[in-house]
Length: 266
Length: 268
Image (cartoon, rainbow over all chains, first blue to last red):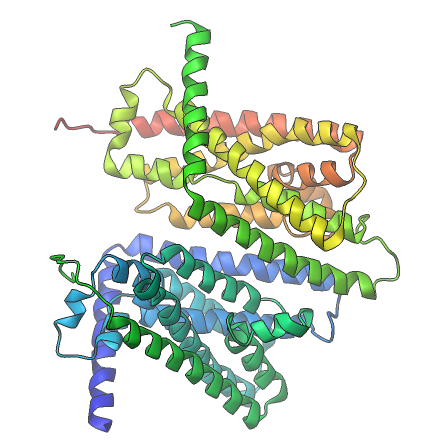
């Protein structure tokens, strides 16, 4: 078990090195995408800055809380799709077009190998942004800083789980690329607004079909309270989202039909 | 070729783009559902803000006016066609050489296609946004003069945005990828154009600067004209739009002429 885990970590490290080297072949494009994502996320932070300058408190949430929300979400998103880029927009079309053959032929478990196969360059910009905002703007003490680092990886697990779940829709619905993108984008959109805005059935939805609660609400609550119980709940939620995705993928894989497509992983 | 024949060609390009836009139902549904989510979230956000405010107006607008302002700015923003990426692709794939041998202006062809595309997208966004706003906050009092003023500034807002995106696309002659620049441009329009917040909410020191930048005349001016029209704002917007269109169009002309000198087309 431990040997297998170490083996997969080595595989992950090898893919990370290969993917980054491949992206650095187009060095200017790689750096410009990172910078652009930094500015993209920064625009939202500026929006909230203007907002809180005019309205200092929003249902008990301050600017620092919203910054933490953005920091943990972007850092988690960046780590998830920087490391496992195929969990982003690639999974649903790959399934629909019968492109899984390539991954089925390897003597590795299909899903982790497939997910590690590519990296989204701009995701590194998101990850950097999250860390810069949290450490530069929120200026945490050592305990908060440590908690943030742990939570950024917890949120990454949620994003990978969400990516697998939405991508696997193609097993059941045919080409579900648009629906998959839509589901993920809606989850991210809700995750970047304070949870105090939502109540009742909508809040229930945000902890079930749209897992925004696990992406940012529980992690930020853990940062606010610094409670181990809240952290454990956030971790449990993340593992739940991941487990749901894995089950959905492998159950769907039974329905997979080869596209007889000849392709290379270059 | 007479001017009328030339205009007819550009009109047909716009018409074809408008019709083909309706064929992609998936994209339309995606855009509309995203619009619905944004409007719902901001309705909640502003409801909380207005509940805590001492007056019934924030930044000069009531809650329903604030949401309708967002309907207009979002409908404009989400209707933007992917001009920059299309021009980028033309340059990168060499398709630009094929466009240049056609009896059409390259920029003019793109402009017609973009406008045809955008008018349909905007109309759909506006219709869906209006239904959602009616359900969430109800109607707002509208004046004919306001609608006319809104319609007066809308075409120049679309034209300005097109020129900005076209310029970004032309940068493909020098850059490996223009997608980063395109993101920076759209976010600049979003933030400084007043998409989510009317300019009256921004810090007082920033407001005079933002008002004279072209971005506000793309989003904030049409939005404000729709919910709270004023003749002063109309005059101000027309002047800013006129100056900005002249500058942007001049830049497109200069950049395109320099860029085309770098074009090498091989037969095949």
